[in-house]
Image (cartoon, rainbow, N blue to C red):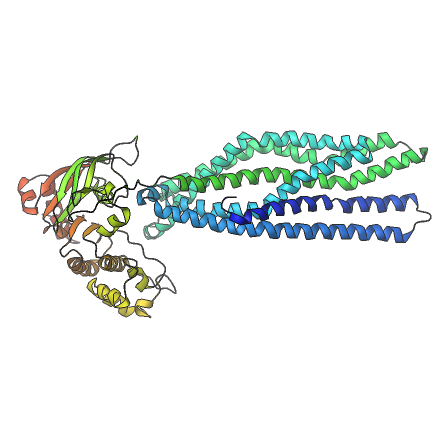
Length: 584
C-alpha cells in the first residue's frame, strides 16, 4: 500500500463495498425460498402479487449487490493502476541506480518478468482478487448464520462436506504452498531468462540448422519447470480430488438427512416445514460451493501477489555502490590498477588475481589473450560496473570509489562489442551520448564516425526510427552508430571492448577510421582479438587466467618469443589461409 499513495484509502473502501455486496448477494436466495414456501403453503389459494413482490425483491437485491460490487471494483482498480505504475516506476528508477554488473548478473529476462509480470500480478490482485477475498471471508459468517437459523440440523449437515473440504484445502495451503509458489516463480524466472538468451541466438540456431537442444541451458530450464509442474500436480492430486468431491456432495448429505428427518409428508405440518427448510438448503448449497472455491483461489492468489511484491522489493533492496562522502576530482586521465583482485562470486574463483599496470594520459593500452582470461573484467572495473575485492583502481591518482558516479561516467566512454540501439531515431540514438547536443553536433560526429552511408540510405535520414517498418542495421553499422555516440560524449578515457567483433571488412575499415577520431588525445584501453589492430599500441598486456602474463610493445613482445609471439604467428597463418590451399 505504500506504493499506492493516497489511493490506498480507495482499496479499503472497495473492500468494504465488496463485503456489503457479498452479504446483499445472499438476499435473492432468501426471497426465492420465501416465494417457493409461499407457493407450496398456499398452493390452493396462492396470491400472485405476493410471489411477484418476492421476485422483485430478489431482482432488486441482486442489482444492488451488482452495483455495490461494480463500485467496489471501481475503487480498487483506481488504486491498483496507481500501485502498478508506481511499482514499475520505482523499480526502473532503482535499476538505474544499481551498478551495471548487478543488473547483468540478474539477467534482462528475469528483470523483465519480475517487473512486468510482478506489477501485473499485483494489479490483478488489488483490482479483482482482494475485493473477492473480502467477500470470501465475509460470506462464511453470513452463510453460517443462515445455515443454522432455519434448521440447525440441516445446517450442521451442510457444514460436514465444507469441513471435509477445509481439511483437504489445508493440506494444499500453509507454509508448503508458499514454498511451492517460490519454487514456481523461480522456475518461471529461470526459464524466462534462458528464453531471452535463446531468442537472441535464433540466427545462429537457424543458420546451423540446430534445434532447441543446442541451447543446453534453455532446454534444461524447460525440463526443470516440467519436472516441477508434474511433481507439484501429482502431490496435489489426492487433496484436490477430495476437496472437489466433498464440497460438491452437500446434496447427497442433505437428501439423506431429509429422508430421515421428514419421513412421511402426510405426517403433519412439522414434516412440511422440514421439507420446505430442505428446499432452502438445496437452493442455498451452491453458494457454499462458490464461497469455498473463492477462499481456495484467494489463498493462492494472495501468496502469488506477496511473492511478486517480494521479488520487486528484492531488486529495490539490491545495494548500490557506496558513494563517496567527499568526492575527489581526478588530476589527469591516467588509469592505474594496483594489485587488483576480483571475483564475480565472493565464494568463487578470482576472475582477476593481483593485476597491476598503468596507462599514461593520452596513450593507448591493448589487452589481448585467451577467452576468459579477464580482459572484459578489467574493462568493466574501470567505470565501476563492480567494485574490486582487493587493491584499487585509480583515475588521475584518485581511487574510482572516491569519485562521484556522475563524474566517473563523464570521464569514461565505453564501446561494447555488442552495441545496443534503442527503438528510436538515429538522431536520438547518437544523442544518448550527450542529450543536450544540437542536431548539427550530432551530424558532425556521425560523419566523423563514418556513418554518412548509413544516413544516406535511410528513408528519413537521421530521423529514421531504427527497428520500425523493416529498418535494421548490421552489426558493423550498429558499432559505427555507437562510436558516434561515444564521439559525442567526448570523454577523456575510452574503453573499447572488441568494438570490431561483428564487423565485415568494409565496416571494419570504416570503424578503424572512426577510431582515429575517437581516440585522438585520449587515454585508451582496447580489447582486441585481431592482433593487427593493436600493433601500434603504446603498451600491450597479455592476459592469461586472470593475470598479466606478458607486457610490452608489439616488437618487445615478439622478441620475448612467448605467449604473444605464438599468438602473432597463429594470427598471421590464419590471415594468410585461403580456401583450396594446403601446406606442402
